[in-house]
Amino acid sequence: MTSEDLAALGGAVQSLEHPSLAARITSMVGKPIELIETVLPISASQVISKAVGAGLETALKIALRSMQRIPQPGSDMLHKALITASGAAGGAFGLATLPVELPVSTIIILRSIADIARSEGEDLSHPEASLACLQVFALGGRSGSDDASESGYFALRALLAKGVSEAARQIAQHGTIKEGSPILVKFVSQIAARFGVVVTQKAAAQALPVIGALGGAAVNYAFLEHFQDIARAHFTIRRLERVYGQDVVRTEYDRLAHSS
Image (cartoon, rainbow, N blue to C red; front, top):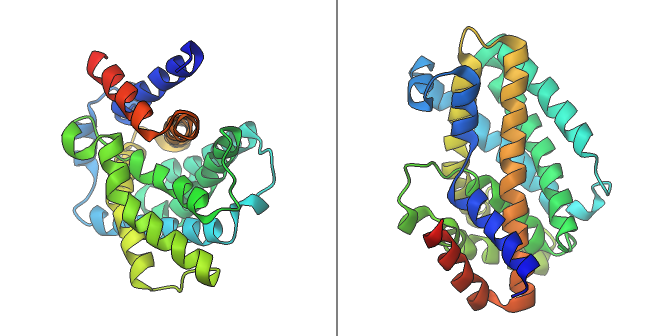
């Protein structure tokens, strides 16, 4: 592996093994994320669960309608402007806006992920590549307290691999996946289980009385940047795997992860 590619892999390891959203939010509001989450009402889990499901289902529909149709190259500044505007509403009106705001934010993030995927050589006309964009929402849901042996990058990829493979095969054969199909439900639920972790952190921060519209916009900005970091790392690794093979990349990844 060249020194340039090794450096790129090292950066990917840092992003994937040391998730930053919780730290960013903690720094922003001056409280540990565990304390921030206590501001959420008991009913919040149901609201978040429904919003996460709606956001991912909408994102999946866009992905399966061929993400190569998304204008390219996209504007990173536009993505950030849209996400902050969406977050301002969440900060101003709190948890009540999440069912509307989160699907919008999820689509904006998906478009940004798609741009990053293309920049790393992905062909989004292939169903597997489009579904790999959706994997980023699960990969970005790892918390710092997770057991690395169970929820590290390659462990999560392995967990999602069967769902991606089944969905991609059905798309290749039939052009789409029927809504409500077991394959679709399973794939969305796997991603939602992880994506919901960071959505809870985001919702808790935006629900703080002191946050307001400006703080809500900043939280959403951090939310977008978090998934952009994860996407760059994920698609860097996929690019390196196409060059060097999965075994070589996995060996170097593990070495760098253990030394960091």
